[in-house]
Length: 262
Image (cartoon, rainbow, N blue to C red):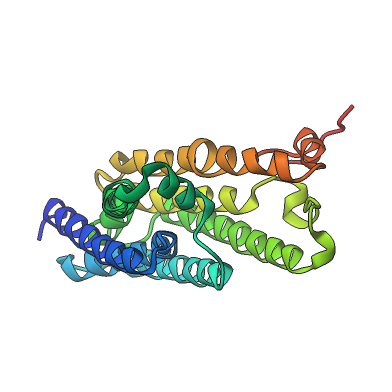
């Protein structure tokens, strides 16, 4: 099967899976289930691309293993964070603004939109898993593995530190500015973006793999300007009195030493 055919099959599978999730969300009156599927969605596509690949290389197995590790960790993290909580405020706001039409509009504005973005971001996975050449790992693969390891560490450790901080009632209303959060206001988002650049580097080691560069570019823009840093900090500035000072001294995305606010 050609890479184009495999890509179209992946799009069909991911949209079908999102439609099933949508039906579950309508029954539960909770669209937050879309977020829980984000990680497993990439695992599903990686598995499908491996099944449809004419020949699997060391790179194919490595990329599939890495995305499975990342996707399942993210799934467990979001599922645990969401347990026992109401629908995410973003979806509650959409539900309130769209009224009774939200139940069917959410299929397009939440689930299929997220599915299309997921499929596009996963294009480096398709190339890296599907390509038969070069069969051996290259220097770009090594760079990609290092970037993935750095990104995965920042994301996992950042989430862990934030979870422990929030679990202590004494920290309510306070700003986490220790650990990785001392050097970047969003270590988990920085880690996620870095990880995708690593996966892109592994795809770029194959013929035509460099063409998937828009995947990590889109992921980085989403994390920095759309659903990540910008959206999150709007609420944090209002809910945490010390967040303005934290912004003044701490890098927004790329880790760096704290600045002197003077």
